[in-house]
Image (cartoon, rainbow, N blue to C red; front, side, top):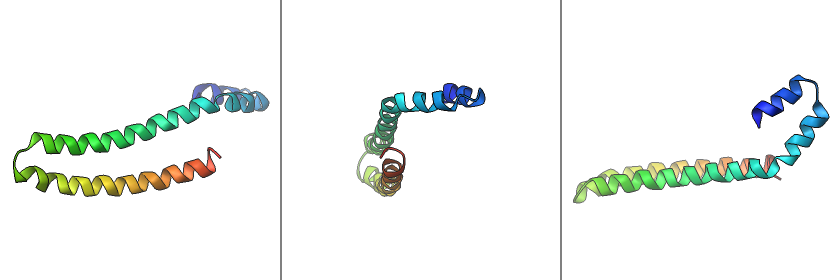
Length: 90
C-alpha cells in the first residue's frame, strides 16, 4: 500500500490517492489487528519458553521477571493501541 500511495502522491494524483486510501481501509485494519496478535502471542511464547526450558524452582525465578516485563510491555501496547484506535481508526 505504501508503494502505491507514494506513487500516486509523487505523480500529483491526490484525489486518486484519497480514493485508494479509503478503499484499503479494511486491509489496514486487518494488518493492525494481525500486528496486535503478534505482539501478544510473542509475549506469551517468550514466557512459556522460559517456563518449559527450565526445571524446578529455577523456572519460576527466571519466568517471574519475564512476566513482569511482558505485563509492563502490554500496558504500553495498550496505550499505543488506544491512540491508534482513536486517532487513526475512528
